[in-house]
Image 1: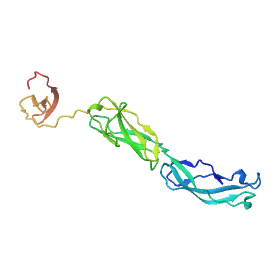
Image 2: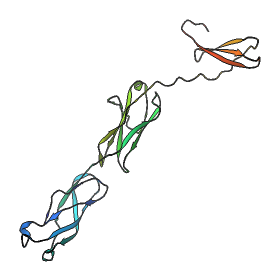
Image 3: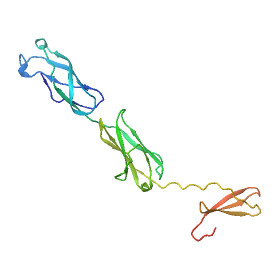
Image 4: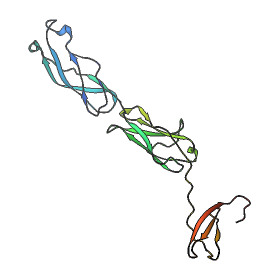
Length: 222
């Protein structure tokens, strides 16, 4: 009895092996005898690899002439398991601004093992290999993307669409109490932390409303 010599499969997480066995023509009693062999094949492990031992069991014969034959299993069948290709998509979520966290969201098949690599344009960002990446100064104005690659029992890659990183929003100045002389119609107050002057107007001799913000330029005297 011969095996077909091509026992292989793509990784599926099981030990099941598809084995085709045939009876050589020189072992047939009659050239046209109707006899076929079926069996169960089992890999010794589930992971990707070469030269994996395959065990044959549940051998049986069928066909009109099967009763005239007996079968013994082959003693040495070797198989291989090749990586499965990842089959998912990846997108980036988060605010595309300086100092903001971006998250790579990969949607694939259950059990897939993958790695992440963030890129600035076409250049890989050193040590940016997690699902989360925080945009840095060098990213401003650049397109950021992430590549997801299969590892272990998986292979292949998928790439996200790039997103352009913008400057961070300017924070509004903190609230500050202003001393208002209600005898004056307009009062100005200087905020050294923000380098701005605020103008306030009194509306009812009891409350004040900020009506304008004036940015200082070099040479201005607050």
